[in-house]
Length: 435
Image (cartoon, rainbow, N blue to C red):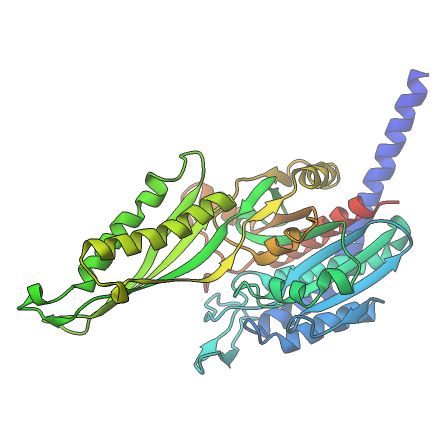
C-alpha cells in the first residue's frame, strides 16, 4: 500500500514537472513575437494621459486572440474579457504610460520619442519604470492562457490602465464603472518590474507592500520689505524654516516607532534678491506611510504646524499659510491569504530559488485602488526581477551601482525578465482559475 501511494505521488510530481516544462517551452517558442512587441512598446512610449497608440496596440493584441475588448475606458484604458465556463473571475492589470525622461541606456532600441506635455513643454519620453515589461508580460500571459483554456475555468479580465505615473488612471477606470460594467473580479493581480532583483525571479510581500503617498504644497505668506529694516516685515523664509524643522516631529514624536512614515520637504522657493525680504515662500512636501491613521495624522499635523508657526510669528488671519494636498495614492495592500496561496503555488512551479519573500517599499502604485472598492477585492502585486545575474552579483560585491526605476539608465535584462514575467503571471492565474 505504501509503495502504491509513493508511486502515485511520484507520478503526480512527474506530470506536474512536465506541465511546468511544457509552459516554459511554449513561452520560449513565443518569445520572438513578444520580443518584437516589447521593442515596439519600448521605442514608442507615451506619457500619462496620452497613451492612445499604446492602448490601441494592446487592445489589438487581446482582440486578435479572442478577447472581447472595450477601448477608451477611463481615458485610454482598455478592458478585455474572456469567459471560459463557470468559475472565479480574475483581473490582471498592466499599466501603460511612460515617463518624461531622456533615455540614456545606449540600447539599439532606445526611445527617441518626444512629446508636448500638459504645460506645452516638449519633453523626451522613456519607459523608465518598466511599463513596457508589464504590458509585454501581460500580453504574453494572455496568449498562454488562451492556448491553455482546457487548464482553467472562469472569467479572465485583462485591464490596460493609463496614467499610473500620475496616479490618475485607476480611479478614472473605477469611476467610469470598471467593477459594474464588467465582471467583478474575485481577485486582482499585477506585477511590477524590480531594479534590484535577478531577472525572472519573483518577490512578494504580504500585507502592506507599497506606501500611501501624498504631495503637499504649503504657500507661506509674509510681509515683505527691505533687508535693512527687517523689523518692519514678517519674513516668510524664516517662517518656512521653522515650519520645516517642526514638521520633523510628526514622525519623530507623533508616530509610533513601530509604524513607518516619511515627511520630506523636497523644494523650498522664495525671494528674488539679496536685500529684499519676500512676501511669500513655497514648500513642496512628500508624505509617505502605510497605515491610513498614520497618514491622516501627518496630513492633519502639517496643517496644524503651518498655522501654529504663523501665529507664533504674529501673522494676521488673512496671512495664514495655505496647505494643499495634491496627487495622492493609498498604500498597496497585498491580501495575506491570496499572497500565501500564490507564493506557495509559484514556489512549487518556478522553484524556491526564484520565489522570495521581500520587504515593503515606500514607493507608490495606484493599483492599490483596485483592492479598496467595497466590498474589498483580494489583491496582489508581486515584484518581477529585471537585472542580469552578473550585475546582481557585482552589485552585491559593491562593484556596481544598479540604476533605479525612473533612471534614464534603467534597462531590464530583456529575455530573462520577459520570459519570467509571462511564466509567473500565467502560473498565478492558472492557480486561481484551475479546474
